[in-house]
Picture (cartoon, rainbow, N blue to C red):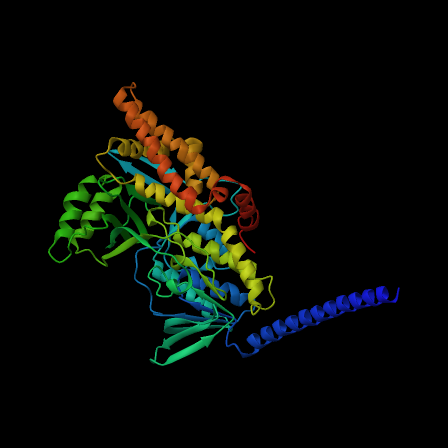
Length: 518
């Protein structure tokens, strides 16, 4: 019996030793993590470094600083940006600004109310209004605006907080150690090279980000270009609509950006941009675009006035698309156009960026200390799921709508283009449903998919009318195949589950669309 007892005591001693060893190890690890967090908080100049002070960066800086975080914002150029993208804040974007406490930034910049989308094609037109819905907890209106003025207001609001350091400088690189981003290296306005450290770095330096490839494996695709110019001392007869003309081969938009300034923007092929120097651009606008613009509402008159006055503030901007891919590196988040881009024809980029800012702010609120890298990484993983209802809806709509608007000699594509116009102008739940999606008032991917299916069926019906024939039947089948190809690509890109299962959309509406203020 003695050897048996000895064996049992030996086994018990081994088990107790193993338990004690692991308890000590776990306690030591926890102590090291707590010490590391304390060290980060004590020695770090900031809790968060934000690269870029555009709409997303400035809004995030303000939101995090209001929660008590110390924020260091580094922006390449603090002068007012001169750009013509981001000139419509959709109704859903205004809601996000209100939830972030930034709704007053739309005041005192001469922003104009946006009530509707007016569309024109082959002498016909329709006006699509934002729906008045009791389910949307904010005023169902957008705002046309000067993007640079909005950015300056957001920067001023963020910089007014004592725990925000807004600095002009050019960030050269991220500082990495063992796959973890620790901060950035940048040159300040005096030309001095400086290193700044923080537990969390947020990259939101725009569509031409030079840090994107250091954080995520995303590649942008140039789809086309827009030429835009401002017409001074002008006011449209309907200044509260975005006027979209189904021109051939690409669309043209005209809208009121201030009380006496109108923006004209015409889309151009990616590989064929008329020269400004030799007058090709003026000829293109006068001879190709202008004759297709309706004379009603002073639209054509305004465009021609702008051309005759020399295309004031003319700029050519690439339209780019880039799917959102999660960042695997710890200690860094990528937001805004540096993270996810879509065709600007639906003017929803700022809305998606502000939605992302709101989600990040709410997630980080649960952490007393951002220095806990493990917990931050877990929260960021959930961010990529939570953002899907808004982002996937907008990305899919932008991609499909921009493709449908392109005029070709292909009968199937032209049938889809006409079917889209007919569907949008048909009124009732079709029009209100699409405008709710466009305005960010109903970010439900499945609802969008159902509307796109209905548009496809409308297009097929148009091609088959007034009576079916083998040729018409063939082109209607090709239209169906084109629609499947367009939609299928985004179902794969955004995820079948996120697009077709309404659970995430319901949770997003419950948590991020419920109230206009936090």
